[in-house]
Length: 116
Image (tube, rainbow, N blue to C red; front, top):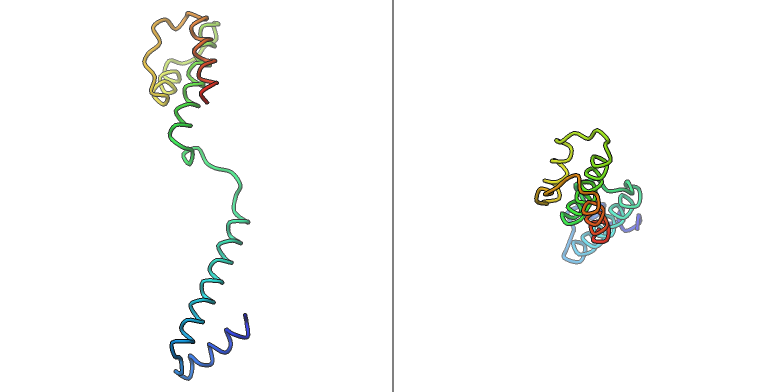
């Protein structure tokens, strides 16, 4: 490949390119570009960030989090209302009618886990 690049460079310097050399150059350029992209992808980070998830997955994770927070609060743990509200809004869920009813919270939490 380096030899072809040298030949094309020499022809470019003498302004003797024809259609065949242009096609060769474009093919080489595509090969080099694909090689560089493949190398970049293999060296890039292997994790995704929060907002690269699908919207459905974000919603499902927030729903699980919401029900976990309600369960902790129903057990008497100090959970801020703003934290619960943030999770509920992220999950697009209606307000829980009775946030102290543990059986309802446990059932809803299990359902959220299954859908996730």
